[in-house]
Image 1 (cartoon, rainbow, N blue to C red):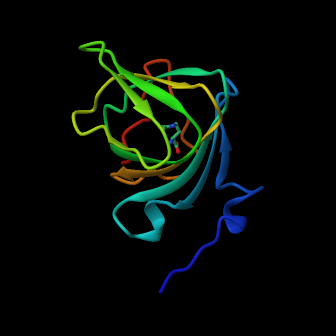
Image 2 (image 1 turned 120 degrees about the horizontal axis):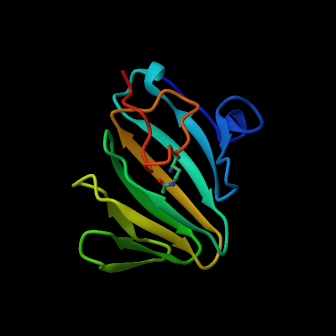
Length: 129
Ligand code: 9YT
């Protein structure tokens, strides 16, 4: 049994901040935990817009707190985000993530990320292997 608390992912190598200051991600489960996915609590700061395109990962994102929206680039569709919303990047969808209020999100990545990833210029994290 593996139990980990948010406190144990705070203020150490599991606690990652985006270089552009848009988000912070506390990564409770990573690839080397062996679950086959990673699990993160992510805060997206108010007033930010972030271009994201996970070419090598699928991601599910559940909103715990805050308000924002996702715009998918291909079709310009806008999906509101509020507490209780789960959005799923099942097609590796390129998107813009906007936070009108600070968002607290629970995020799952498949395949799992390894730890210190931040977005490249292309909006992606590198392949996990
Ligand atoms: C929702 C999203 O993808 N935010 C960027 C950070 C990411 N959730 C992460 O690395 O935890």
